[in-house]
Length: 79
Picture 1: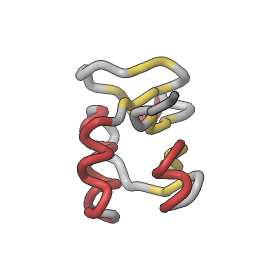
Picture 2: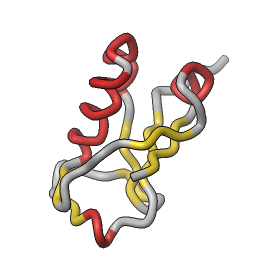
Picture 3: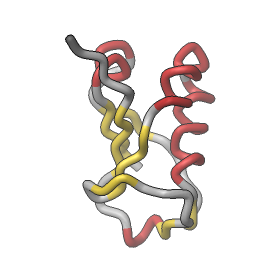
């Protein structure tokens, strides 16, 4: 599944990354798959939110067949 990345993750890794997900998955599985490929971003991923079909996802299980889009939203700092 193609995952959209934003902020520092998009700057460092790219705007999208492909990850393999099981047919049923949790949002934490998405972050873990990215962390496995890019362990240096563990801290950022730990603080990031997962959005599934443009809504922030809670810890419920999702069916891959029902999902159109997944995005990782890192924390944003501003001033």
